[in-house]
Amino acid sequence: MTPRPLSVLAAILLLHVLLALPAHPDQLAWAALARPAPELAVLILLALAAGRTVARRLLRVAATLALTLVTVLKVADLAMLESLGRRFNPVADLPLIDASVRLIAGSLGPWQAAGAVLAALLATLLIVAGTWWAMGVLMRRAPRAAWMRIAGLAASVAGIALLALMPPPTAAYAIDRAQLSARTVTELRQFNEQARQDTLAGLQDPLALIDRDVLVIFLESYGRTSFDTPFFADTHLPRLRQGQQVLQDRGLAMASGFLTSPTHGGQSWLAHATLANGLWVNDQTRYQAAIASGRRTLFHHAADAGFRTAAVMPAIVRPWPEASTMGFQRILAAPDLGYRGQPFNWVTMPDQFTLAATDRLLRDGSDPRRLFAQIALISSHAPWTPVPQMLPWEDLGDGTEFDAMAQAGDPPNVVWRDRDRVRAQYRDTIDYTLQAVLDYAARQREDAPLMILVGDHQAATTIGLDDRREVPIHVIGPPDLVARTDGWGLTRGLVPEPGSPAMPMEALRDRFMRNFSGSLDVPPA
Image (cartoon, rainbow, N blue to C red; front, side, top):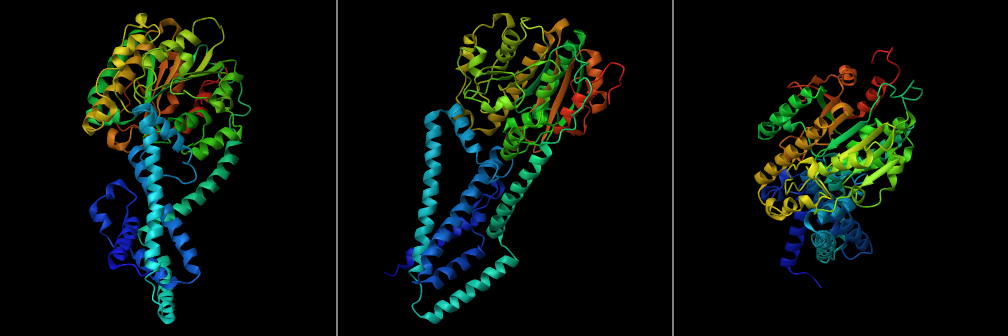
């Protein structure tokens, strides 16, 4: 049965929309859908040329799969660029699907997460069904005359050749995604080779110059925008200067600068792995490769030096088996920290409680060995509502003291209707995190640990108003230990000099090991 003209028009329109769909949020407008799609002409010619021959089913299947795949990748790019500031990698980012679902469940609820999964599946099925139908409509309009189909086939072959020479946007996009996948596979092979090589092998007296605990503390979503964007800097710089004065009065020294993070807008674990491994870990494939490579992390080396190593991870609520390969002898996940209060949406507990739990569980004096720990603070993680407030440290109990805060204010689905309000909430949670960690440092007194405060990544550009992958680093501790970082290009105090260059985050592991190893008779490298 020959399709009606309206059906043919609808089929062409559907295929045009899928082909013309942009892959970047900045291009997402009606004007983008109005641009010509040269691939559509070739697709129509192929459909008419296949006509009623045996090849038409193969063409229909191939066209449906190809167009569905390209469309799904475009949608994934739109989502990733909006949330993480980068495109979706078809090879490296598939494991993020599970993490994204869990983030939605933690922020908005399990029903919303289930709804998002079902919506994604339904949208994919609709694309498949719509493309299959549209190709079928075009094929049923094929002319019966053989010479007309041959002419159509010749025209489509010529069109394909022309597209290969001068690819239009959708064809160029598909080629780029295929090349990215091939590059990722190659890079993964190279990364595995690099990970097996360790420049620290044979280092003399590793970390022998440190006579106290070491705390590597990641501050969630803490980026350079806190220093360079007035909307954030007007709040965060006074907090840092106030904390600097208090720490100076306690006899502690400070040095600060910037690092280049491997990620932007999310995926904190990539920054954790980059610092620990001393290698650039900028996607999930390289992260998995780092775990599988057997490379010795900063925490392996610390354990070899006689430290007891630990990870304090309040965001971890499920089994984390790969942690055993990262050099951690003890893992304190969310259930292990003793928090019995209400969560702050996705955030399981306030940073002040996490820091207090670290001292209670790891630094209570029951073990004479020095501690080398990674602590991941998460109060400044999206959705940035509600904003915690500091309590007197002596009043902290099982966390129920925070319940009133956890239930205050509007829920995320209300706050996120106003982007300016989200930015204000983000600013305030960073301010809270800075207040908590600086107050914690000031409380250490004579037993002050060597603290390395590091931002994991900047917030998404639409929130943080900064698309750079640069994050702060603050070294806080006794003056003699902080002085050993003089070769890192840092500024004394908590506020780096404006325009300070960023050091690669992957360089920090080796610099730290070299500057704090050996004997006192050996000057720092």
